[in-house]
Amino acid sequence: MTTSITPRQDFEIHPQLADPLLPELLHPDRLLWTPRELAELTSTVTTELTSGLRSLLRFDPDHRWWARLALTDGVELWLLSWLPGQQTKPHDHGGASGSFTVLQGEIGEEYRYPGGPVRRRTHVAGEGIGFGAGRAHQVTGIGSEPAASVHAYSPPLVATREYATLADVPAEIPSLAPILGR
Image (cartoon, rainbow, N blue to C red; front, side, top):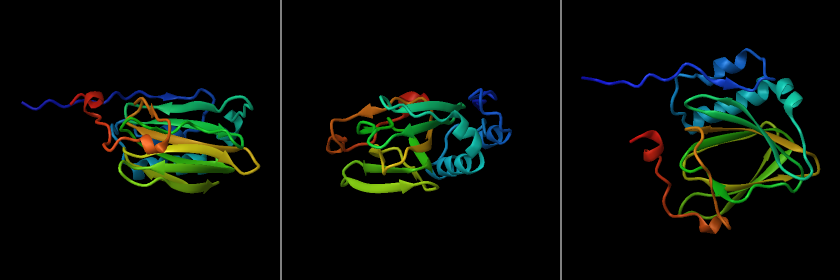
């Protein structure tokens, strides 16, 4: 006897995003996205939904701002804003894969995979990256202009883990087995 799990066919989309392309991009039947698929998603969303994203975008001088754009059983999609100097704490994504594409401005990223060195990159408008489950990073708004980026994670709703520094990232990638019911 074979038992198959049927994904829900429903999903959430931010109420102010009315572009009919977004539901097509979300593939609600896909339960686990690869880093490449996530990178394609964030790249397409920033390129094709630019005006809708800009209408949502807010900048807060006291706190980083973010809004969830969409959620399915397999992926969550976020819009984040960065004023110069605003940053995350060093963190990982709890074993989820991820991606981000810069909508406008520049963001700096220090990142590390378990057991590897800390590296630095600058990401400018139009650039994106997909990454595997073990990547920990700290992201910062850099340059003189406000920045914004679109982020995606799969599986969705996995809790991040914060660190004092990227040097504190453990040597092993966290397991998703409890989250995935395995």
